[in-house]
Length: 210
Image (tube, rainbow, N blue to C red; front, side, top):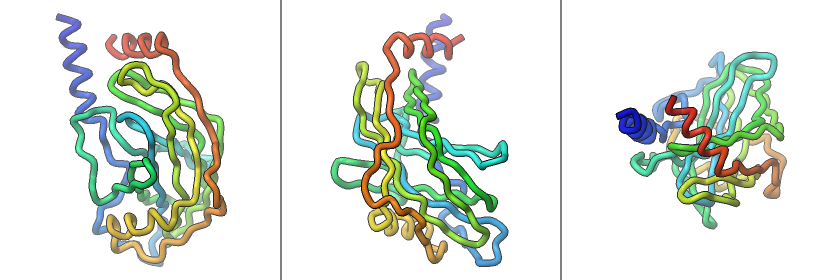
């Protein structure tokens, strides 16, 4: 009976796993007099279906969050308005309304119904300014290892995909004007990577059910 409840729990989590990265809607309008700014970018992946996320936080603050692409569940339906793809990669753009200040993107995770892996070994900083829309760049995951249907390893890259992402951003958020970029990374740059073992996956799956 307990095993049945665990399976049902995992099934429910899987259905809800494909959550959006955005905290603004398609009809959001950014004014020059706005007290907040908008940060935009993309997350893509080459590999099996999972939720690929990049973690961020505001410097000298407890404010934090994540942006991502994909889903930990085959039952979720991607948002076609924010989708981007090309050269074997697929994913989505994101848009965040944030308070002005410096933010750092310094962690990543890959999650499915049964696994979560996380590393914090890089730092991409960006300044958010009131009334402005800034394009941060693109984060890309290349799957390196798997255990069955579970992704257990990946390399993470950072790159300037402004030309690819801008049409998708304009389509998804047409009322956000003058999206500028501060990204000076012209080439795909490896920023992190790692693996999680099969035994560790099993322990996390058991721990989540208790």
